[in-house]
Length: 153
Ligand code: IDP
Ligand code: MG
Picture 1: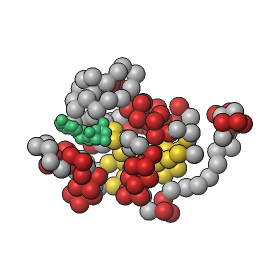
Picture 2: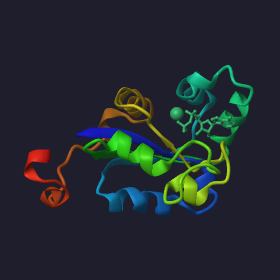
Picture 3: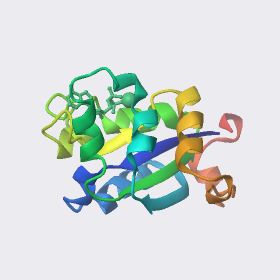
Picture 4: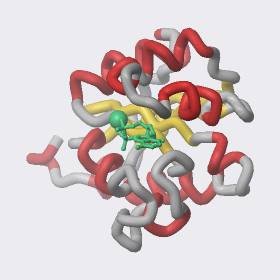
């Protein structure tokens, strides 16, 4: 099964949306297999947002990610990368569909509540960036038979 990274950003922490975000993924049927609060550093953000390094707002987004600690989560499930990304909605909260996390809770491009991995390959790289091996828990939910049919897993 796939694993993917979610970062609950300072925009969610400050607005009391931690439980709301976790609740949505949990109710969907994804399995939480790692979670911790951490203060991000300039170094880790330079790596994490390397694809935006040339953009004029690069420093601003790094700064906004360090205003409070964040919560990093690892969610597991069949096609969890795609599911989580779809549930987050598009980057711009003003354009994100209603019913998505960004569509429901954000009116901003930058202050958009969550980070979600965009591909399976990047999810692996990002999980290794934010978690040590012993912080990801490999256990099987007993209710798996109520989440998936036998031939799906
Ligand atoms: P994503 O989070 O939807 O994958 P990316 O393009 O990877 O979007 O950008 C990472 C983060 O950088 C976004 O979530 C957002 O917080 C911020 N960001 C992206 N584009 C802009 C912009 O044009 N202005 C301000 N912030 C931006
Ligand atoms: Mg991205």
